[in-house]
Image (cartoon, rainbow, N blue to C red):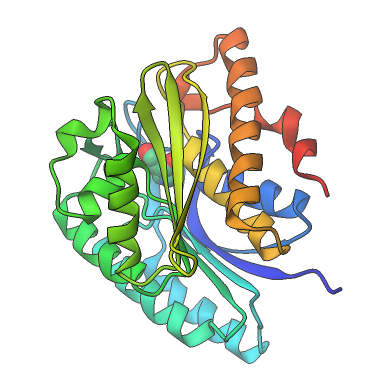
Amino acid sequence: MAVPKVAAIHDLSGLGKCSLTAAIPILSICGVQAVPMATAVLSNQTGFESYAGADLSSYLPAIAQEWKKRKLELQGIFTGYLSSESQVEWVAEFVESFRNESTLVLIDPVMGDRGKFYCGFDDRICHAMKKLCTKADVITPNITEALMLLGKDTNEAEQDKDLPIVQGYARELSKLGPKTVIITGIHKGEEIWNIGYDAKKDDFFAVSTHRIGNGYSGTGDILSSVICGCMVRGETAEQALTKAVRLLEVSIEETMRDGTDPNEGIAFEHHLKLLME
Ligand code: PXL
């Protein structure tokens, strides 16, 4: 089988091991070609005390036009951090223009974590992201982003959760359009749960792990990249989530031992082999 192609639409951040610096190696090890579209170039992810960079929104239409000339056929479209409301709206048009019946569209609605928006984001990005999610086959919000998309109070994001309540959130989010919803980073005692919902089967799945550390840069992007790579190569969402959580677990354990600054991200490079078929 030819190597499947996935358009990976995220920023390129020098430091932080998130977005494209996570998506490209992970898709590659899954046997999938990343076709990157950099939405912005940044010195580092925005959780550091400062950053420098450039938004690339004005270049994206010309890049898409060249891809059309090359008759690019995509087996997947995978979006993550997008810099502005207008960029999110443009990406929704891109999805419509490039998808076909067999394209897997995975939208990771990157907006915030631990109950708060990331630097520079507010309700406007949430409004646009909710519309973008209607185009998705799969969405992978963390619990904060799920609450934002549902218009609920995000202060409860870090509180211990009753899992049936989160299952209800996943089912509600699937009504936006995506057949698969995976809500990540749900606190339950000393564990972190990730809940999946398959709307076609009206069935739930869940993968948990011990809580280690207090949150590292890029973990959500790594998880969504694994889901994308594994699903494009034919695995189920549940199989993909199980692999993603295992990769995060061992990478975070190593990162804790190394004493790395959480803004720098996790030591996933040493564990990518877990994703080989
Ligand atoms: O990991 C999410 C993410 C991606 N890209 C950029 C970010 C963040 C989170 O802060 O700042 C630029």
